[in-house]
Length: 307
Image (cartoon, rainbow, N blue to C red; front, side, top):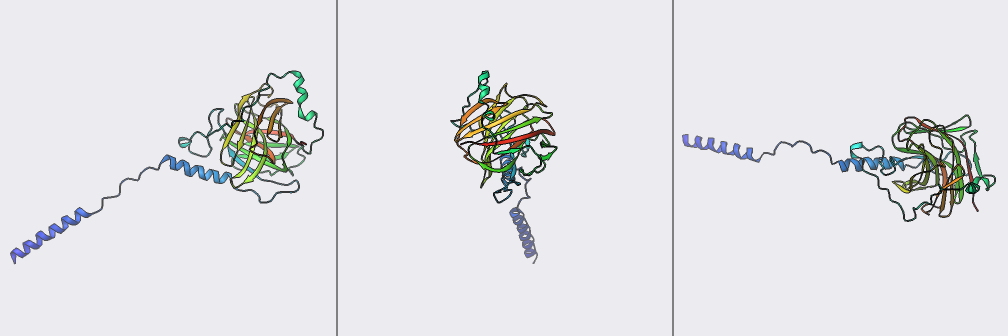
């Protein structure tokens, strides 16, 4: 009996040892998330917000139409997408097309002033001096605000958050000359504003051309495909653009098929051949890079159909 008891004790100790050896280890410290995965999730969220459809029908009369927001370039050579943590923000892919070779005209002679499209096109097919906001989808969100008062369209970018907020009117046009008079208030550098053209709704959201001018006297052309920008004409300085705050610029966008031309104050800035978009609605955009509460006042927009 004594030996049996010893055997039982030894056997019990052996079982305890074996069970202890088979126990699972305590959970290790959680692994930090992959920054690339965080960026991908953030980018997908932003793209989903950018491409949400606003409205489902095409208006047949002057009434509210879709609007939207786009992430925008931060410098002439580097671009970032807004809303992604700075530590995870990659450089945006900017791809120039083979047709993206603008023709500079800063050596213009006085005779070229006669090429001012407005001087030869007669009365516009669409004209708005903002007696009211009936031609536009006025809205406000956390980035931008569009409002009409005192015969002026006020575009306001609340923060220098590298977003382009845009708004569309109702006509659908293909070949056109589009022009607006606009005056930026306090601004600097690449704080920008301009025209949206040939904008249509796709499964990725609204696509469009954006022709803009900046506070420091540069212009650019970009195309937006619902997910990213392609730079067609990079930010280019021109003496024809009035730089600085409180300077009124009359900027124009000519589109005839794939032939696109750009004007400031009646002067040709550059040309490009591009047929990415062939028709659509037009509108306006604003984006702040440096200045909180950057605002631009627009007192007239006109559109002429081209034969």
